[in-house]
Amino acid sequence: MSSLLVDNIGELVTNVPGTGEGGPLGIRRRAALLVEEGEVVWVGPAADAPAADRRIDADGAAVLPGFVDSHAHLVFAGDRAAEFAARMAGQPYTGGGIRTTVGATRAASDEELRATVRRLRVEALRQGTTTIEIKSGYGLTVADEARSLRIAAEVSEETTFLGAHVVPAEYADRPDDYVSLVCGPMLAAAAPHARWIDVFCERGAFDADHARAILACGQAVGLGVRVHANQLGPGPGVRLGVELGAASVDHCTHLTDADIDALASTVVDAPSGPQTSTVATLLPGAEFSTRSPYPDARRLLDAGVTVALATDCNPGSSYTSSMPFCVALAVREMRMTPAEAVWAATAGGARALRRTDIGVLRPGARADLVILDAPSHLHLAYRPGVPLIRQVLQNGVPR
Ligand SMILES: [Zn+2]
Image (cartoon, rainbow, N blue to C red; front, side, top):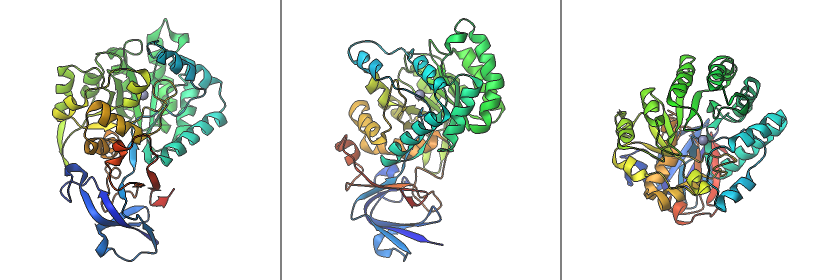
């Protein structure tokens, strides 16, 4: 059994509260960490570091858990750069461009889709993302949704069936029939390759009744629930997610007091302190790229709602795979503290995926970690746009 010591860590963010300074970040100074068989097996002072077969010298830098990007759409073809340019020139975002990507995705070969997914997966890894959730949703036929998830599952264990992204053009005047297709043959073909089901619950996409029906069908075959909710305007998505016990409601840009109360009511005790079992996942890359008002993160945090940050990487409304960029946006634009943002991008993402083995660095956790080219996690927001990821370990393997 080969062991690897990450030694001479200046600031180790463990996300284990009570083991150091920094509240929930559980920061240890002058630390070391031992990895065996892809798992963290020891964390402690560098002065007490055990012997190991191999050693990485962090040279006083900060080390944190790998980013957990719990919301991404990587299976698509084509891009929408022209739509982005038009939007920056003043056209509003409506979500209608999704159908443009659906057409391109249906026309693409498996190899083209696979190449895009792999390219983006590597791009995210280089920026410190060790876990990424990947949704279908640009196929919207039985065969195209199933192949999207099959290809996604080649690079991630966190795959989500999003057949209910929009109603495709051929069903525009009979949405009930499309919901039946999603709940029937499409779900049957998708479920073997998916862990989660998701619905875009929004005006112009799926209303509460349709969204509830689709999510319930997914639950009945063992899929966990997540919801695209309250992105473009107020709506029923957040409360529907809470009603169905969703792991996460995502976007949360337009929330009422009732929505916040519903989320706060899902509070449970966790080893790391009270958390909400339904996480609010904020996707500030979408607001950045659509020039829209940002979600009110402070209101959620002050109400005790657990918040995650994710990229929403997709070719239309947020074509970034960069979690450090989202951390910087969260701090600058949503008034999260750097500590809150880093926690939300690591432990928060893990909560949104109901995972306890990632987003944390303690014995027994997966050895997914990032060594920064910086002495502190603060630099992720303090030095926006700078490539600060020096090295990534995924399952204990340097990448
Ligand atoms: Zn999305």
